Amino acid sequence: MIPSLLGISLVLFTVLAMAPGDPFEELATNPAVPPEVRAALRAKFGLDDPVWTRYLHWLVAMIHGDWGFSFVSRMDVDKLILQRLPVTLIVIGSSQIIAMLVALPVGVLAATRPYSLFDQVANTLAFVGFSLPTFFTGLLFILVFSIQLDWLPFVYRANIDATGWQFYWEHIKQSIMPVMVLGLFQGASLVRFVRSSVLDVIKLDYVTTARSKGIGERKVITKHVVRNALIPVVTLVALQLPIVFGGAIVTEQIFRVPGIGSLLISSMLSNDTPVVMAVTFVIACLVVFFNLLADIIYGWLDPRISYR
Amino acid sequence: MAGSTPASLTADTPAAAVVAPRKNRPTSPWQEAWRRFRRHRLAAASGIVLLLLIAVVALGPFIWPVPINEIDFAAKLQGPSWAHPLGTDDLGQDLLARLIYGGRISLAVGLAAMVVAVVVGVLVGALAGMSAGWVDAALMWVTDLFLALPLLPLLLLLMYLFRDHFKRLFGVEGGAFILIVVVIGGLRWMQVARLVRAQFLSLREKEFVEAARALGASKVRLVVGHILPNALGPVIVAGTIDVAAAIIAESTLSFLGLGFPSDIPTWGSVLRDAKDYLDIAPHWALFPGAAIFLAVITINFMGDGLRDALDPRRVL
Image (tube, rainbow over all chains, first blue to last red; front, side, top):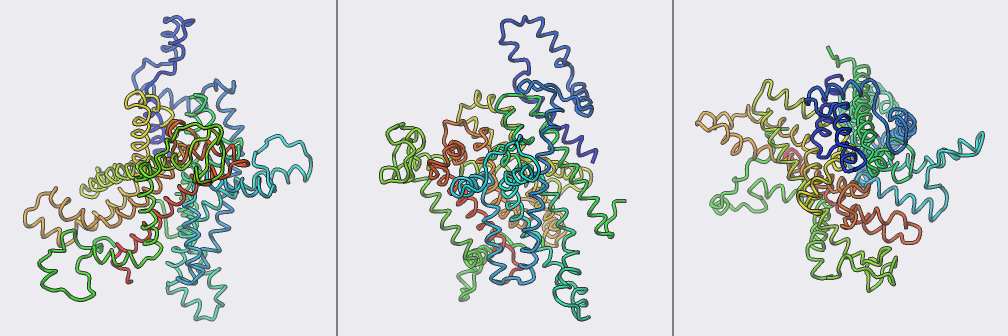
């Protein structure tokens, strides 16, 4: 985990260091700031140091959570991100649950009846599902459920002035569309993984043995096949995470969910570089962290795998 | 798996085909693959639809010579009509002309980014596959690192940081095009690299490679003439799917406002402009979205068909 984090930080820093333009460009064009002040600022922030020192300084600052100051929001970047992060994690987490709820039954059913009508329909729908870009699905959902049917609000509001059950209901109502958009996209790509993974297991000898012992087909599938077939799916879910974060950025932007994805876009459009760098770094760290988590779960689920 | 892909590009020597014309028996592996591809009905249909789409986009400006930026406020936000088959946007600009123009950009970006990704991927994969030891380990470490990078945030970051610089270097449209192609291609080569490396690892131990080596073939000749043609099957499939992914990536960037400048209509940026008028002009969003969807799904189906066609283990 540490090497990949270091590698990712190196990639990010290289991108930043290679980028044309100067963080103090605005000061340079501002006639009210004399050149010696600019030089002093450059020296203070270490812009004239050799690259390696700058990288180490930057890395130490990143690890300490010292991510700078957002010029637009007028607050420390780490506070800003901590404010926005929970929403993103909730949206991503619940969309993953939706994705599994869709992909598992469909994938298992398709694999138990390979090349049947159901299998073909599921396969085609899966193709449609992951060929529809999330930003278009989001707009379609708004068009159908907000504008035509007027069931769901299409703008996410953080401050809902209701109490008790009403409060939770409003929150759930406004989260349905972003979560469904992400979840269905993710589910569509997982269906095929689940199907092929179940197909791999279902032909194994131990499944035949279980059947020949007189265990019902339903029980064979749920207790014997699915449990083993799911092990590789765990890794695939983790491998898909970079894509999921990308999808989260898009859906947050469409539905104006106040998460780190919409923070990233808005700070890019307003040239708020410290926030942009920090959000990218946080997302990269989260992806690595979840990959590690998947590796650990994988080792726990499948005792044949050891990391020694 | 590896090495079982169709034998070679040059298997169809014309003389042999004339001497033994067996009926209903395609002679070359590529003819066999083509036969199997046609059998995959969805893929074949997708191929036709995609060809139509490409034809419309390529020939469209000659058949429908309406300028993309002719502003006509009298006709703004109109639905489809004879004068404007796909309707107009908030400035009264003709959507069909804009979508044709955007389609050229989107498809060109998709193809060019795929070429970048495949070239980088084949180079890295071939280098890793031929040179065992620390070169292989280092290259694969880099590949895994890139696979763990969050693609879209990094794409956005690169666009954000380098956009103005490229605009100055290559002009507004050219700069954006080059940057988008390089960035998307440069972040999508990993799958191809892993596939090529896996193929190389098994192919380089095969007898025919050993025979070529025994005959004194140089390393380059070994790779280019013997190993690479046999590793091509999976690369073609991955490359096809990469085109679709690149089109989605470009549209996403434009949709988020960090792709092509907003005055250049691409499918993504038209959709971005349309999203605030969903209630009064839904056609404006539906047509570009449908165009992206159509392009992506046909390419994906073709990739699926090619996967079946180029996999000789599959009996059809």
